[in-house]
Length: 291
Ligand SMILES: NC(=O)c1ccc[n+]([C@@H]2O[C@H](COP(=O)([O-])OP(=O)(O)OC[C@H]3O[C@@H](n4cnc5c(N)ncnc54)[C@H](OP(=O)(O)O)[C@@H]3O)[C@@H](O)[C@H]2O)c1
Image (cartoon, rainbow, N blue to C red; front, side, top):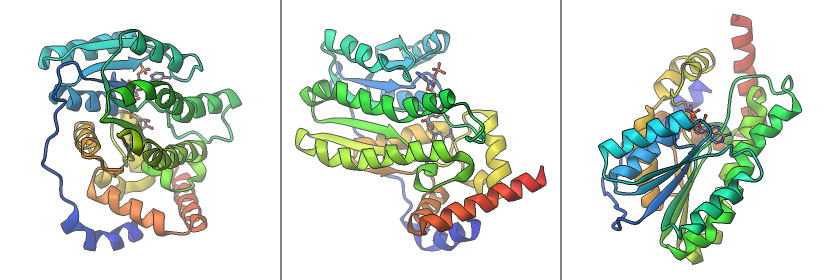
């Protein structure tokens, strides 16, 4: 895996530039909804949007974290931040959130489906309920939010949908089977949706980051499984949020922050699936032996 990534490194270095053009909401009533926007990558996305004058609706479960995010953003930027506490894995949540937005005739210009769950458990050991929770949160909630908020996004077009997948969505990963499968679904959904929504002037992007150290456990796991390469591949959350928003506003389909992560994604995508699964399974065995 590491050698394949290094092999792809050289020809791409010069083209890995960061775009500089900035887009602005240009309307002080424009809102962006960030599902999973109270911390981590979602908060960074929210902040990058606030910098561009977007008012925000942040969704998460924990009300304290939501309140903290609201006060930090409103203190730093001249934007209105609304917060809604919902568990997005619940079937009723998307409909209730959409009803809240519709009741206010919200000038919704961007929907960011960020909330998701990973973890490094062996999914064969997980209860079916835990697996269902992950599938509902990672896949079903983003699809439901998109479908139910489509009328508002269409009304306020040109508008944007940003779905957050992962580099893990490009390969079958035995030790993260359900997570990788859900993120693969997000990538496929986004590619198809981009064409479905084109006539409505709604642009669809998919953010697929490599490691982002939003918690200590992610850093630990990355070091354990991917070693030096993984640590070098990591991109800070603030940078991920900034790139995600900048490139979504430019209408970019696939957004992979960081040169090494981009190169790895190319390597994984050109590789036969069987080979990718075997390589990841080898990485897992090596890690198991070390422990
Ligand atoms: N971090 C990485 O290395 C990495 C890499 C690739 C892709 N990703 C993807 O990026 C996204 C964000 O990751 P992150 O590391 O930034 O996560 P995080 O720090 O745990 O933040 C997740 C956000 O989603 C909210 N959330 C979680 N479960 C929810 C639920 N059931 N209902 C409503 N809100 C919920 C959280 O707030 P509450 O807990 O209060 O609900 C929080 O605002 C995920 O989809 C993840 O799969 C992350």
